[in-house]
Length: 154
Image 1 (cartoon, rainbow, N blue to C red):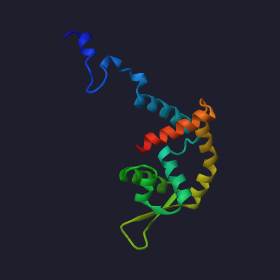
Image 2: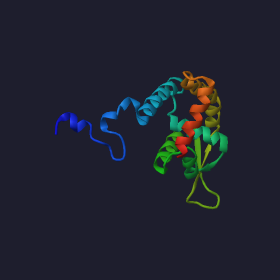
Image 3: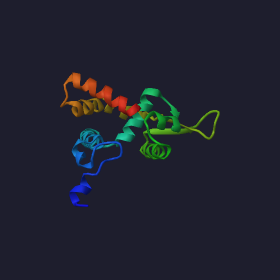
Image 4: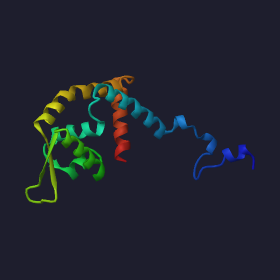
């Protein structure tokens, strides 16, 4: 079998491998778009990571909640949200208390400093979104967000 034959093998149930262009693959394009967004985020909100900001923003909108529930609300697994909360607690941005009726559960809430931090950063976060979506028209933005949400929900 020649090298050309090897590169044009048929993919199971689909086109041949010679039809595969990395630059046209959804995962590659999503990763590049995410890298651009993360760079914009870091330039504007460099003091927090996106997962840390997400946790603070969600606590701001829902109030005190269990660590496990917060992880679900911000799409982080248990180990990831624990690390995020530990780092936020070390910075004095959140407080942890045992649940009133279930001592195994930890309740997370914003500290006064965390509240101030979120309130100061929300306008910046909106600008991050605006800058990320700036190459799109308003109509394209609405369509993009609708379709991206559909992909995320599976």
